Length: 380
Ligand SMILES: [Zn+2]
Image 1: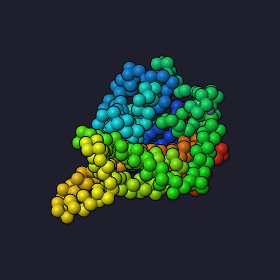
Image 2: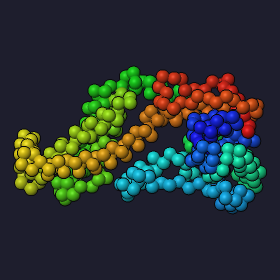
Image 3: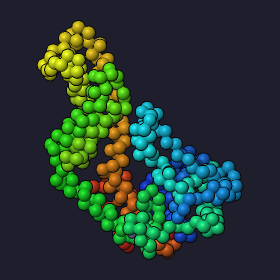
Image 4: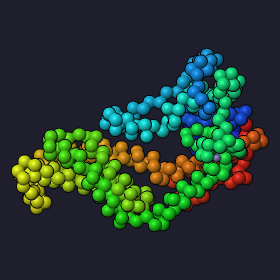
């Protein structure tokens, strides 16, 4: 099964979602199925997740694996993303975890996460039924049940399911809708009242603050630490946000431009610090300009290498920030509207629904709130 076949199968079974992620319920057990990989008409692996009230014992997953030998395994999240490898350390780990899209809430031990593999579409459909059926049968024996408290307000008496906080679970419809409306209103307000000019001022100030650690380290210890360069675009981004800059698609472009322009500024800062610390003298921007022109005309390769090196480290920082930006801002709204679009009443009649259009782009112009009269969620 490729992703298109997966999407068709899940939609046929009355699940709601976008191309890769589907939410459904099986005997009142809400679950998500996420396409991981697969070939057209062939082998497929998907991630099946069910949110429980407490830690899922390994004895239970062992039981499921035994019943479906070779087809089911416990899903483990590979946290060492590319950025994780590149920067390493605390910063890297924090960013890698922020970026781990596959297997959201991976740290949540109450979230049963199984990867299931089948060789054909038909086999996959049967396997999904079989695994879900076994979960429903054995979970109560382990003291596990589907949490009945709404994750938004923490109160019981849920009336619907929605994809919220990393899993498909019982919620109050009005809680999810109010959440989506509040998020959308915030974005609308930013697009209406946010200012590019103020944002850019904030971004420049933020970038300067973010550049200070690199400048100090380079001037004091003559040492460049790539991780610290990530603070420049990061500072620019938070500065932009803090100064109420308009959060449009152009934000990343603004951050990239300011970060690149920071390279000579950082070099000047480094010279300036060096002069002040070692000679007690002020190194003017004019002398920096003169020195650089002199160096460029006499030994251009040295200057180019030095700038190239800084740009390279800056690019790593930008990569990280790109990830963070895509996780926040518009993405936040996208998540919220995804959540609202998966909203289905509990115990709806079993009736497959037509595939639904889901937001795949930031849905700024559209109302993200699902109608209460949305097609009922089928039990598959
Ligand atoms: Zn609630």
